[in-house]
Length: 179
Image (cartoon, rainbow, N blue to C red; front, side):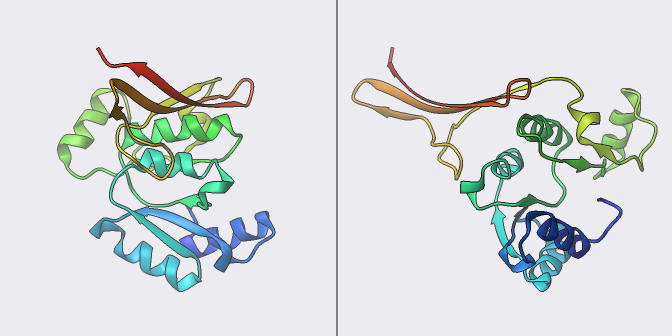
């Protein structure tokens, strides 16, 4: 709940999962703007996994128990938030966000496309309101997907496709001749 503190949210998630806060891992973009958030999450007892980039990958990681990631917290890009929400919808998860502008240009762009309520909290269904398909292919190696590899005249890719209508998650490892 974006109206609550990170500590309150960590306690609520731990309770919902039948765990204690110290067993939770939160992924956060390693940015100066997140210094207070990182300090609070650590003070609560939860583990912090800092990432340099890839807030979409951070959101998707919350969808897979084997990733070891329970939550994504912090401020990222609006398009990335919508994409992350689509992935989370595919596994019947939860997502909340609100717009945070870095400058007047960003605020003006939002106004031009019809956004007028700058305090609105967007829920999962606001960002991904119908059935969605999420697809991603790793470009560089990450914690979720391997990157593109060129070897022995072939290109290898690692992709993920998720469908909210069926709950299907498909992992694809593709090998194709390099042309």
